Image 1: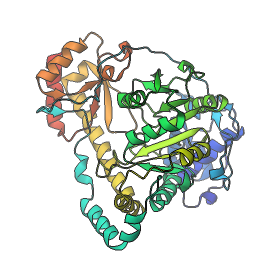
Image 2: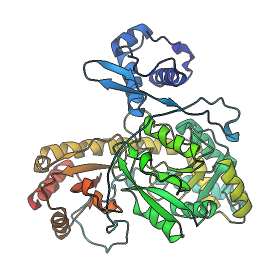
Image 3: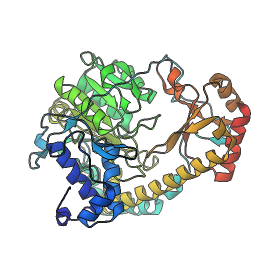
Image 4: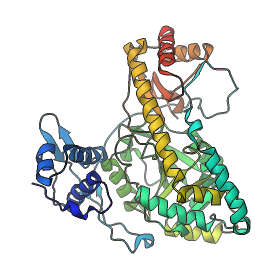
Length: 483
Protein backbone atom coordinates (compact mmCIF):
# COMPACT_ATOMS: atom_id res chain seq x y z
CA UNK A 1 0.00 0.00 0.00
CA UNK A 2 1.28 3.46 -0.91
CA UNK A 3 2.01 5.58 2.16
CA UNK A 4 3.15 9.20 2.17
CA UNK A 5 3.66 11.84 4.84
CA UNK A 6 1.10 14.40 3.69
CA UNK A 7 2.08 16.82 6.42
CA UNK A 8 5.11 17.77 4.31
CA UNK A 9 2.97 19.23 1.55
CA UNK A 10 3.34 22.82 2.77
CA UNK A 11 0.96 25.13 0.92
CA UNK A 12 0.40 22.77 -2.02
CA UNK A 13 -3.12 21.39 -2.56
CA UNK A 14 -3.46 17.92 -1.11
CA UNK A 15 -4.21 16.21 -4.42
CA UNK A 16 -1.27 17.94 -6.11
CA UNK A 17 1.16 16.78 -3.40
CA UNK A 18 -0.15 13.21 -3.63
CA UNK A 19 0.17 13.34 -7.43
CA UNK A 20 3.79 14.48 -7.12
CA UNK A 21 4.61 11.74 -4.58
CA UNK A 22 3.29 8.99 -6.86
CA UNK A 23 4.88 10.60 -9.94
CA UNK A 24 8.29 10.74 -8.21
CA UNK A 25 8.00 7.07 -7.21
CA UNK A 26 7.36 6.21 -10.87
CA UNK A 27 10.30 8.33 -12.03
CA UNK A 28 12.62 6.84 -9.39
CA UNK A 29 11.57 3.28 -10.24
CA UNK A 30 9.93 2.59 -6.89
CA UNK A 31 6.78 1.91 -8.86
CA UNK A 32 7.53 -0.18 -11.93
CA UNK A 33 5.77 -0.59 -15.28
CA UNK A 34 2.71 -2.78 -14.89
CA UNK A 35 2.44 -2.31 -11.11
CA UNK A 36 -1.18 -2.05 -10.05
CA UNK A 37 -2.04 1.00 -7.97
CA UNK A 38 -4.41 0.77 -5.00
CA UNK A 39 -8.03 1.52 -5.71
CA UNK A 40 -9.05 5.11 -5.08
CA UNK A 41 -11.09 4.16 -2.03
CA UNK A 42 -8.37 1.97 -0.49
CA UNK A 43 -5.72 4.65 -0.93
CA UNK A 44 -8.05 7.33 0.44
CA UNK A 45 -8.74 5.20 3.53
CA UNK A 46 -5.03 4.43 4.00
CA UNK A 47 -4.00 8.09 3.80
CA UNK A 48 -7.08 9.37 5.65
CA UNK A 49 -7.99 11.75 2.82
CA UNK A 50 -11.13 12.26 0.79
CA UNK A 51 -11.92 10.11 -2.22
CA UNK A 52 -11.93 13.18 -4.45
CA UNK A 53 -8.31 13.94 -3.43
CA UNK A 54 -7.12 10.55 -4.68
CA UNK A 55 -9.34 10.76 -7.75
CA UNK A 56 -7.86 14.13 -8.75
CA UNK A 57 -4.30 12.85 -8.21
CA UNK A 58 -4.97 9.75 -10.34
CA UNK A 59 -6.66 11.79 -13.08
CA UNK A 60 -3.65 14.12 -13.31
CA UNK A 61 -1.27 11.14 -13.56
CA UNK A 62 -3.58 9.60 -16.17
CA UNK A 63 -3.71 12.84 -18.13
CA UNK A 64 0.08 13.11 -18.20
CA UNK A 65 0.53 9.47 -19.19
CA UNK A 66 2.33 8.17 -16.10
CA UNK A 67 -0.43 5.64 -15.46
CA UNK A 68 -3.18 4.00 -17.51
CA UNK A 69 -6.51 2.46 -16.59
CA UNK A 70 -8.22 -0.77 -17.56
CA UNK A 71 -12.00 -0.93 -17.35
CA UNK A 72 -13.20 -2.71 -14.21
CA UNK A 73 -9.59 -3.58 -13.29
CA UNK A 74 -8.04 -0.35 -12.01
CA UNK A 75 -4.97 1.81 -12.54
CA UNK A 76 -1.50 0.63 -13.60
CA UNK A 77 1.94 2.22 -14.01
CA UNK A 78 2.79 2.96 -17.64
CA UNK A 79 5.86 1.46 -19.31
CA UNK A 80 8.64 4.03 -19.54
CA UNK A 81 12.34 4.43 -20.37
CA UNK A 82 14.56 6.71 -18.33
CA UNK A 83 16.03 9.89 -19.80
CA UNK A 84 19.43 11.26 -18.79
CA UNK A 85 19.48 13.80 -15.97
CA UNK A 86 18.81 17.27 -17.34
CA UNK A 87 20.19 20.43 -15.81
CA UNK A 88 21.07 24.01 -16.61
CA UNK A 89 23.01 26.88 -15.11
CA UNK A 90 19.67 28.57 -14.56
CA UNK A 91 18.53 25.97 -12.01
CA UNK A 92 21.86 25.01 -10.47
CA UNK A 93 20.43 25.75 -7.03
CA UNK A 94 17.61 23.29 -7.53
CA UNK A 95 17.96 19.52 -7.59
CA UNK A 96 16.83 17.94 -10.84
CA UNK A 97 15.46 14.45 -11.39
CA UNK A 98 15.85 12.16 -14.35
CA UNK A 99 12.84 12.30 -16.60
CA UNK A 100 11.28 9.62 -18.68
CA UNK A 101 10.40 8.80 -22.24
CA UNK A 102 7.96 6.45 -23.94
CA UNK A 103 8.02 5.42 -27.59
CA UNK A 104 5.11 6.35 -29.75
CA UNK A 105 3.74 5.62 -33.19
CA UNK A 106 1.30 7.08 -35.72
CA UNK A 107 0.24 8.03 -39.17
CA UNK A 108 -1.38 10.62 -41.51
CA UNK A 109 -0.50 12.49 -44.65
CA UNK A 110 -1.76 15.61 -46.50
CA UNK A 111 -1.72 18.18 -49.58
CA UNK A 112 -1.18 21.95 -49.99
CA UNK A 113 -4.34 24.05 -49.60
CA UNK A 114 -5.61 27.54 -49.00
CA UNK A 115 -4.79 28.63 -45.45
CA UNK A 116 -7.19 30.39 -43.18
CA UNK A 117 -4.81 32.91 -41.64
CA UNK A 118 -4.69 34.85 -44.92
CA UNK A 119 -6.37 38.26 -44.92
CA UNK A 120 -10.04 38.01 -45.76
CA UNK A 121 -12.64 40.46 -46.95
CA UNK A 122 -14.84 41.83 -44.21
CA UNK A 123 -18.29 40.28 -44.25
CA UNK A 124 -21.46 40.55 -42.20
CA UNK A 125 -21.84 37.07 -40.72
CA UNK A 126 -24.88 35.76 -38.88
CA UNK A 127 -22.57 33.55 -36.82
CA UNK A 128 -18.78 33.63 -36.52
CA UNK A 129 -17.02 30.56 -35.09
CA UNK A 130 -13.51 31.44 -36.26
CA UNK A 131 -12.42 33.23 -33.08
CA UNK A 132 -13.53 33.14 -29.45
CA UNK A 133 -15.84 36.05 -28.67
CA UNK A 134 -17.51 37.43 -25.57
CA UNK A 135 -14.80 37.21 -22.94
CA UNK A 136 -13.47 40.65 -23.93
CA UNK A 137 -15.98 42.16 -21.51
CA UNK A 138 -14.23 40.32 -18.68
CA UNK A 139 -11.02 42.32 -18.98
CA UNK A 140 -10.60 44.85 -16.12
CA UNK A 141 -10.03 47.96 -18.24
CA UNK A 142 -10.37 50.34 -15.25
CA UNK A 143 -7.65 48.42 -13.40
CA UNK A 144 -5.35 48.48 -16.43
CA UNK A 145 -5.93 52.22 -16.87
CA UNK A 146 -5.22 52.86 -13.19
CA UNK A 147 -1.97 50.89 -13.33
CA UNK A 148 -0.93 52.72 -16.48
CA UNK A 149 -1.55 56.08 -14.79
CA UNK A 150 0.44 54.87 -11.80
CA UNK A 151 3.30 53.94 -14.14
CA UNK A 152 3.20 57.38 -15.74
CA UNK A 153 3.21 59.16 -12.38
CA UNK A 154 5.52 56.97 -10.29
CA UNK A 155 7.76 55.08 -12.71
CA UNK A 156 8.12 57.66 -15.45
CA UNK A 157 11.90 58.25 -15.26
CA UNK A 158 12.78 54.56 -15.18
CA UNK A 159 10.01 53.48 -17.57
CA UNK A 160 10.98 55.87 -20.32
CA UNK A 161 14.74 55.60 -19.97
CA UNK A 162 14.96 51.79 -19.82
CA UNK A 163 16.14 50.62 -23.25
CA UNK A 164 17.43 47.07 -23.42
CA UNK A 165 17.31 44.53 -26.23
CA UNK A 166 15.66 41.92 -24.01
CA UNK A 167 13.02 44.10 -22.36
CA UNK A 168 12.73 45.82 -18.97
CA UNK A 169 14.44 44.06 -16.11
CA UNK A 170 11.39 44.47 -13.91
CA UNK A 171 9.04 42.65 -16.29
CA UNK A 172 11.59 39.91 -16.95
CA UNK A 173 12.00 39.34 -13.20
CA UNK A 174 8.22 39.31 -12.80
CA UNK A 175 7.91 36.74 -15.60
CA UNK A 176 10.64 34.64 -14.01
CA UNK A 177 8.66 34.46 -10.77
CA UNK A 178 5.40 33.85 -12.62
CA UNK A 179 6.85 30.96 -14.62
CA UNK A 180 8.21 29.35 -11.47
CA UNK A 181 4.97 29.68 -9.51
CA UNK A 182 2.50 28.76 -12.25
CA UNK A 183 4.43 26.71 -14.81
CA UNK A 184 7.09 25.06 -12.65
CA UNK A 185 9.90 26.65 -14.66
CA UNK A 186 13.00 27.80 -12.78
CA UNK A 187 14.54 30.29 -15.21
CA UNK A 188 16.70 33.34 -14.84
CA UNK A 189 15.32 36.72 -15.86
CA UNK A 190 18.54 37.11 -17.86
CA UNK A 191 17.36 34.36 -20.24
CA UNK A 192 14.03 36.02 -21.06
CA UNK A 193 13.52 38.10 -24.21
CA UNK A 194 10.38 40.25 -24.52
CA UNK A 195 8.99 41.22 -27.92
CA UNK A 196 5.94 42.73 -29.62
CA UNK A 197 4.14 39.52 -30.51
CA UNK A 198 5.17 35.98 -31.36
CA UNK A 199 5.78 36.82 -35.02
CA UNK A 200 8.60 39.17 -34.04
CA UNK A 201 10.15 36.54 -31.78
CA UNK A 202 9.97 33.92 -34.55
CA UNK A 203 12.01 36.32 -36.68
CA UNK A 204 14.62 36.57 -33.93
CA UNK A 205 14.79 32.78 -33.69
CA UNK A 206 15.51 32.55 -37.40
CA UNK A 207 18.49 34.86 -36.93
CA UNK A 208 19.71 32.86 -33.93
CA UNK A 209 19.32 29.41 -35.52
CA UNK A 210 20.39 30.43 -39.04
CA UNK A 211 18.51 31.13 -42.25
CA UNK A 212 20.07 28.10 -43.94
CA UNK A 213 18.38 25.72 -41.51
CA UNK A 214 15.17 23.67 -41.54
CA UNK A 215 12.53 23.69 -38.79
CA UNK A 216 9.97 20.93 -38.25
CA UNK A 217 6.38 22.15 -37.78
CA UNK A 218 3.06 20.45 -37.03
CA UNK A 219 0.69 19.41 -39.81
CA UNK A 220 -2.10 20.40 -39.40
CA UNK A 221 -1.13 23.55 -37.54
CA UNK A 222 -1.05 27.34 -37.64
CA UNK A 223 0.05 28.21 -41.16
CA UNK A 224 1.31 31.59 -39.92
CA UNK A 225 4.12 29.77 -38.10
CA UNK A 226 5.66 28.13 -41.16
CA UNK A 227 4.93 31.15 -43.36
CA UNK A 228 6.97 33.39 -41.07
CA UNK A 229 9.85 30.91 -41.08
CA UNK A 230 9.76 30.49 -44.85
CA UNK A 231 9.46 34.24 -45.48
CA UNK A 232 12.77 34.54 -43.60
CA UNK A 233 14.44 31.98 -45.86
CA UNK A 234 14.08 28.98 -43.55
CA UNK A 235 12.81 25.68 -44.94
CA UNK A 236 10.07 23.87 -43.04
CA UNK A 237 9.39 20.16 -42.64
CA UNK A 238 5.68 19.46 -42.15
CA UNK A 239 5.30 16.59 -39.69
CA UNK A 240 1.94 14.83 -39.18
CA UNK A 241 0.27 14.54 -35.79
CA UNK A 242 -1.84 11.84 -34.18
CA UNK A 243 -3.95 11.75 -31.03
CA UNK A 244 -0.83 12.36 -28.92
CA UNK A 245 0.49 15.28 -30.96
CA UNK A 246 3.46 15.53 -33.34
CA UNK A 247 4.89 12.11 -34.25
CA UNK A 248 8.63 11.82 -33.44
CA UNK A 249 9.18 8.92 -35.87
CA UNK A 250 8.04 11.13 -38.75
CA UNK A 251 10.78 13.73 -38.16
CA UNK A 252 13.87 13.54 -40.34
CA UNK A 253 15.93 14.62 -37.34
CA UNK A 254 19.20 14.90 -39.27
CA UNK A 255 17.74 17.59 -41.55
CA UNK A 256 16.15 19.89 -38.98
CA UNK A 257 17.74 22.22 -36.46
CA UNK A 258 14.59 22.68 -34.36
CA UNK A 259 11.12 21.23 -33.77
CA UNK A 260 8.26 23.72 -33.33
CA UNK A 261 5.38 22.21 -31.33
CA UNK A 262 2.36 23.18 -29.20
CA UNK A 263 2.32 20.40 -26.57
CA UNK A 264 -0.12 21.96 -24.07
CA UNK A 265 -2.96 22.43 -26.53
CA UNK A 266 -2.50 21.75 -30.24
CA UNK A 267 -4.29 23.93 -32.70
CA UNK A 268 -6.56 23.08 -34.39
CA UNK A 269 -7.04 19.51 -33.11
CA UNK A 270 -7.02 20.41 -29.40
CA UNK A 271 -4.66 17.52 -28.61
CA UNK A 272 -2.77 17.64 -25.31
CA UNK A 273 0.56 15.85 -25.62
CA UNK A 274 0.89 13.18 -22.88
CA UNK A 275 4.03 12.63 -20.82
CA UNK A 276 5.09 9.65 -22.94
CA UNK A 277 5.19 11.65 -26.18
CA UNK A 278 6.76 14.67 -24.46
CA UNK A 279 9.60 12.56 -23.16
CA UNK A 280 10.10 10.88 -26.53
CA UNK A 281 10.51 14.24 -28.27
CA UNK A 282 12.78 15.56 -25.52
CA UNK A 283 15.00 12.48 -25.83
CA UNK A 284 15.11 12.90 -29.61
CA UNK A 285 16.24 16.51 -29.22
CA UNK A 286 18.87 15.71 -26.58
CA UNK A 287 20.33 12.71 -28.41
CA UNK A 288 20.67 14.72 -31.64
CA UNK A 289 21.57 18.09 -30.08
CA UNK A 290 18.51 19.83 -31.56
CA UNK A 291 16.24 22.53 -30.19
CA UNK A 292 12.56 22.27 -29.37
CA UNK A 293 10.55 25.47 -29.80
CA UNK A 294 7.78 25.05 -27.22
CA UNK A 295 4.84 27.27 -28.09
CA UNK A 296 2.80 27.09 -24.87
CA UNK A 297 -0.40 27.91 -26.73
CA UNK A 298 -3.55 28.14 -24.56
CA UNK A 299 -1.79 26.60 -21.55
CA UNK A 300 -3.57 29.05 -19.24
CA UNK A 301 -6.98 27.77 -20.29
CA UNK A 302 -7.31 24.31 -18.82
CA UNK A 303 -10.57 23.30 -17.17
CA UNK A 304 -9.53 20.09 -15.49
CA UNK A 305 -6.90 19.90 -12.74
CA UNK A 306 -3.53 21.60 -13.06
CA UNK A 307 -1.61 22.55 -16.25
CA UNK A 308 0.77 19.94 -17.63
CA UNK A 309 4.51 20.48 -17.01
CA UNK A 310 6.38 22.27 -19.77
CA UNK A 311 8.93 20.60 -22.01
CA UNK A 312 11.36 23.30 -20.87
CA UNK A 313 11.17 21.89 -17.34
CA UNK A 314 12.46 18.58 -18.75
CA UNK A 315 15.34 19.91 -20.86
CA UNK A 316 16.14 23.57 -20.38
CA UNK A 317 19.31 23.35 -22.48
CA UNK A 318 17.36 22.10 -25.51
CA UNK A 319 14.02 23.89 -25.24
CA UNK A 320 13.10 27.43 -26.27
CA UNK A 321 9.96 28.27 -24.30
CA UNK A 322 7.54 30.80 -25.83
CA UNK A 323 4.25 32.35 -24.76
CA UNK A 324 2.17 35.46 -25.35
CA UNK A 325 -0.29 37.70 -23.52
CA UNK A 326 -2.17 38.52 -26.72
CA UNK A 327 -4.56 35.57 -26.31
CA UNK A 328 -5.13 35.77 -22.56
CA UNK A 329 -5.51 39.56 -22.59
CA UNK A 330 -7.28 39.69 -26.00
CA UNK A 331 -4.80 42.01 -27.60
CA UNK A 332 -4.94 44.77 -24.97
CA UNK A 333 -1.18 44.42 -24.93
CA UNK A 334 0.81 42.86 -27.73
CA UNK A 335 3.53 41.39 -25.58
CA UNK A 336 5.13 37.98 -26.03
CA UNK A 337 8.27 36.47 -24.54
CA UNK A 338 10.66 33.58 -24.97
CA UNK A 339 13.11 31.86 -22.64
CA UNK A 340 16.38 31.02 -24.36
CA UNK A 341 18.82 28.28 -23.30
CA UNK A 342 22.17 29.65 -22.10
CA UNK A 343 24.06 28.97 -25.33
CA UNK A 344 21.43 30.73 -27.46
CA UNK A 345 21.26 33.60 -24.98
CA UNK A 346 25.02 34.08 -25.39
CA UNK A 347 24.58 34.21 -29.19
CA UNK A 348 21.71 36.65 -28.82
CA UNK A 349 23.75 39.05 -26.68
CA UNK A 350 26.70 38.81 -29.05
CA UNK A 351 24.85 39.18 -32.36
CA UNK A 352 21.50 40.86 -31.60
CA UNK A 353 22.25 42.80 -28.45
CA UNK A 354 22.17 46.08 -30.37
CA UNK A 355 18.39 45.76 -30.88
CA UNK A 356 16.05 47.96 -28.85
CA UNK A 357 13.03 46.35 -27.25
CA UNK A 358 9.99 46.49 -29.55
CA UNK A 359 7.57 46.89 -26.62
CA UNK A 360 7.14 50.38 -25.06
CA UNK A 361 8.63 50.41 -21.57
CA UNK A 362 5.46 51.96 -20.15
CA UNK A 363 3.40 48.93 -21.25
CA UNK A 364 6.02 46.57 -19.86
CA UNK A 365 5.88 48.27 -16.44
CA UNK A 366 2.07 48.27 -16.47
CA UNK A 367 1.99 44.55 -17.29
CA UNK A 368 4.51 43.86 -14.52
CA UNK A 369 2.24 45.62 -12.01
CA UNK A 370 -0.79 43.77 -13.40
CA UNK A 371 0.92 40.43 -12.72
CA UNK A 372 2.60 41.37 -9.42
CA UNK A 373 -0.62 42.65 -7.83
CA UNK A 374 -2.55 39.48 -8.73
CA UNK A 375 -4.84 41.02 -11.35
CA UNK A 376 -3.59 38.77 -14.14
CA UNK A 377 -4.27 35.58 -12.17
CA UNK A 378 -7.77 36.79 -11.32
CA UNK A 379 -8.41 37.69 -14.94
CA UNK A 380 -7.26 34.26 -16.13
CA UNK A 381 -9.53 32.57 -13.59
CA UNK A 382 -12.52 34.58 -14.86
CA UNK A 383 -11.74 33.78 -18.50
CA UNK A 384 -11.17 30.12 -17.66
CA UNK A 385 -14.58 29.95 -15.98
CA UNK A 386 -16.15 31.73 -18.95
CA UNK A 387 -14.66 29.25 -21.45
CA UNK A 388 -15.71 26.33 -19.27
CA UNK A 389 -19.31 27.54 -19.25
CA UNK A 390 -19.28 28.26 -22.97
CA UNK A 391 -17.87 24.79 -23.63
CA UNK A 392 -20.75 23.26 -21.68
CA UNK A 393 -23.27 25.39 -23.59
CA UNK A 394 -21.78 24.25 -26.88
CA UNK A 395 -21.90 20.58 -25.86
CA UNK A 396 -25.52 20.83 -24.77
CA UNK A 397 -26.56 22.86 -27.82
CA UNK A 398 -24.87 20.37 -30.14
CA UNK A 399 -26.48 17.41 -28.37
CA UNK A 400 -29.93 19.06 -28.58
CA UNK A 401 -29.54 19.95 -32.26
CA UNK A 402 -30.08 17.85 -35.38
CA UNK A 403 -26.37 18.23 -36.22
CA UNK A 404 -25.53 15.61 -33.57
CA UNK A 405 -27.13 13.03 -35.87
CA UNK A 406 -24.46 13.76 -38.49
CA UNK A 407 -21.33 13.82 -36.36
CA UNK A 408 -19.70 13.94 -32.94
CA UNK A 409 -18.04 16.63 -30.83
CA UNK A 410 -14.55 15.68 -29.64
CA UNK A 411 -13.70 16.02 -25.97
CA UNK A 412 -10.98 18.44 -24.98
CA UNK A 413 -9.56 19.63 -21.65
CA UNK A 414 -8.83 23.25 -22.43
CA UNK A 415 -8.60 26.06 -24.92
CA UNK A 416 -11.26 28.19 -26.55
CA UNK A 417 -12.47 25.90 -29.32
CA UNK A 418 -13.80 22.41 -30.01
CA UNK A 419 -13.72 19.95 -32.90
CA UNK A 420 -16.82 18.50 -34.57
CA UNK A 421 -16.26 15.49 -36.84
CA UNK A 422 -19.04 15.11 -39.40
CA UNK A 423 -19.89 11.94 -41.32
CA UNK A 424 -17.51 11.00 -44.13
CA UNK A 425 -20.37 10.87 -46.65
CA UNK A 426 -20.73 14.67 -46.53
CA UNK A 427 -19.23 16.73 -49.36
CA UNK A 428 -16.94 19.19 -47.55
CA UNK A 429 -16.39 21.55 -50.48
CA UNK A 430 -20.12 21.83 -51.10
CA UNK A 431 -20.83 22.40 -47.40
CA UNK A 432 -18.18 25.11 -47.19
CA UNK A 433 -19.78 26.96 -50.09
CA UNK A 434 -23.23 26.73 -48.51
CA UNK A 435 -21.96 27.98 -45.15
CA UNK A 436 -20.37 30.99 -46.81
CA UNK A 437 -23.51 31.81 -48.78
CA UNK A 438 -25.57 31.57 -45.60
CA UNK A 439 -23.14 33.91 -43.79
CA UNK A 440 -21.95 31.34 -41.25
CA UNK A 441 -18.21 31.72 -40.77
CA UNK A 442 -16.51 28.50 -39.75
CA UNK A 443 -13.26 26.76 -40.68
CA UNK A 444 -12.45 23.13 -41.40
CA UNK A 445 -9.34 21.32 -40.16
CA UNK A 446 -8.37 20.63 -43.78
CA UNK A 447 -7.77 24.38 -44.17
CA UNK A 448 -4.97 24.10 -41.61
CA UNK A 449 -3.27 21.20 -43.40
CA UNK A 450 -0.19 21.75 -45.55
CA UNK A 451 -0.91 18.64 -47.57
CA UNK A 452 -4.17 16.84 -48.33
CA UNK A 453 -5.81 16.04 -45.02
CA UNK A 454 -8.06 13.14 -45.97
CA UNK A 455 -7.92 12.03 -42.35
CA UNK A 456 -9.40 15.37 -41.31
CA UNK A 457 -12.08 15.67 -43.97
CA UNK A 458 -15.42 17.06 -42.73
CA UNK A 459 -13.94 18.19 -39.42
CA UNK A 460 -15.13 21.56 -38.13
CA UNK A 461 -13.07 23.91 -35.93
CA UNK A 462 -15.61 25.69 -33.74
CA UNK A 463 -14.40 28.52 -31.51
CA UNK A 464 -16.57 29.31 -28.49
CA UNK A 465 -18.59 32.45 -29.12
CA UNK A 466 -21.03 34.57 -27.13
CA UNK A 467 -24.03 33.14 -28.98
CA UNK A 468 -26.68 32.05 -26.50
CA UNK A 469 -27.50 28.37 -26.19
CA UNK A 470 -30.94 28.53 -27.84
CA UNK A 471 -29.54 30.51 -30.74
CA UNK A 472 -26.68 28.00 -31.05
CA UNK A 473 -29.20 25.20 -31.49
CA UNK A 474 -30.80 27.16 -34.34
CA UNK A 475 -27.41 27.72 -36.01
CA UNK A 476 -26.47 24.04 -35.68
CA UNK A 477 -29.87 23.06 -37.12
CA UNK A 478 -29.29 25.51 -39.96
CA UNK A 479 -25.96 23.82 -40.72
CA UNK A 480 -27.75 20.46 -40.67
CA UNK A 481 -30.17 21.68 -43.34
CA UNK A 482 -27.19 22.42 -45.64
CA UNK A 483 -25.85 18.87 -45.43
